Image (cartoon, rainbow, N blue to C red; front, side):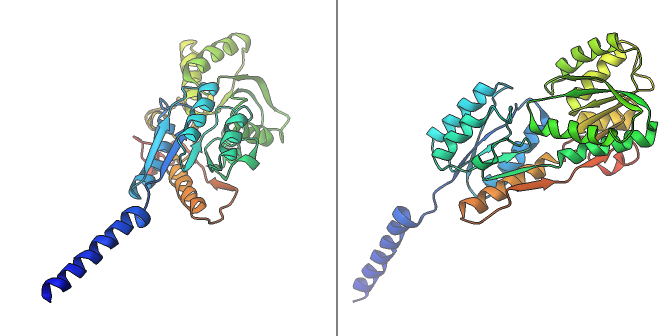
Length: 312
């Protein structure tokens, strides 16, 4: 009798585990992610922010580095679709040019979560989680005015295909348009790259005998501009602004007067908030179409409050 009862109990246990294996065991979710590149510590921190949330839930993140190549980024997203990932995180290299990849994902009913760099076709994505890039430009302009007044010759180093960079530049320009004495004497693209910014800035220096301010779309661009100005012995007295809050930028602010300030983003937070939004979407919950992450101006006065050796 006892053996019969034991047999029944064991049979029930086997059946329960079989059902869990076949029907009830949670399937591991797989996510894809692609940014501008993974050489930039900003995108490494952003990727890590996503990865930390995903792996804490026992799921998997596959990250693809397009190396600043839009066609590679589009192909990477198409590969994610072919792999039938659960969702895709994208920081678009070209806010309009990325459209074919977004259409492919939409057709496959795979949600796209935009992180950091917004896209033009917002109807093709589930949500956008990004810094308040417009305000980043405004903060730099306001700080500049406090330091130098309302008369200056300004150089803008831009990135016309990345919406995040466009918003920073436009926020800066909207603020300085209030004052006739603040003149943009040169505005050129550096694609957000240090080496390109250095070359572009070298040409601007030769063409412009008087420069008071350089507004760079990100910290690597600011570093390139500083290198060119130093090489030409023109850095002294020029205010240079970046955006990102990178370790190199914060270190430069702490140690000297080469970089005036950086409008700091918080890529780890962008990543974790993007991942949280993805899980909500996959669970059938509604999320806001546009989630803004605040930025903060970092300069000599408050650098001690920040972690200098890493993105925050």
